[in-house]
Image 1 (cartoon, helix red, strand yellow):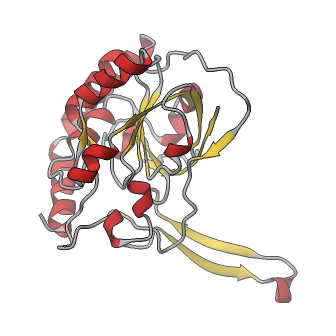
Image 2: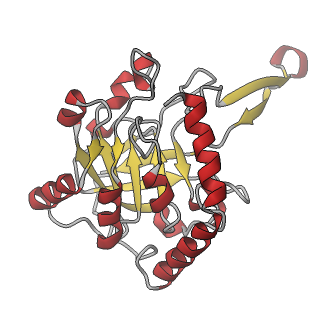
Amino acid sequence: MCHACVIENVKTSMLSRRELFRGAASVGLASAAAGVISARPALAQSTGRVVDLTHAYDGDFPTFDGNPGILYSSQFEHDRDGYKIWELTIYEHTGTHIDAPLHFAADGASVAELDPSSLVCPLCIIDIKSKAADDPNAMLEPEDIEAFVSANGDIPQGACVAMNSGWADKLGTEGYRNDADGNFTFPGFSKAATDMLIEIGAGSIGVDTLSLDPGNSADFAVHYSWLPSGHFGIENLANLDALPVSGATLFVGAPKHKQGTGGPARVMAVI
């Protein structure tokens, strides 16, 4: 499917599913009230070592629609004014950024309305690099979650579950976004996996790619289910290989602009 067709399909689906969003958002709020989403997770003891999971970005950083995610306009100059200030035009979903429920749910929580406790949480990293090497549109599936739990123990309540596909190594090349034919190509979560994560009480998900859904997704099933359920996601994570698969604490420096559907975030982990 061409890029324009994919984007048009999203717009049409978002309009036709407005009523569905209202019901899903209500379910998400009820779950939060029951303590599923806003459960206070037990944070790990740490050595104090900080790992930055955020890519530095500028107007050349790849974006879903292909347009520059940030534009700079100089307003004040050192040699003329004695100090420097840029005027920035920033699109919310660019660089390492957060997807708030409002992004895909008309009545979902904005980024400013997220429970602050959900932004500091245990981090679990599920490695699918071998699958992604064989299939560039590989998905993190329920069996990957089961294998993680078998090897590392239960996923803590409220944890962020991050997919490590190795895709961050492709940043700076066309392969981070597209295949040789110009089609979106990158790994993501399957809806079956995120449905399982909702059931076990995970609080958020993260990917080292452009989207929570795989590149060849035509229906954005994860966006349309995970976000309206009251959860958030993080896209374009960096440096996941620098962390253990469990035991780190994630700090998500989400923006707090009213009515925000998300926005660039400084994401760090402490181990």
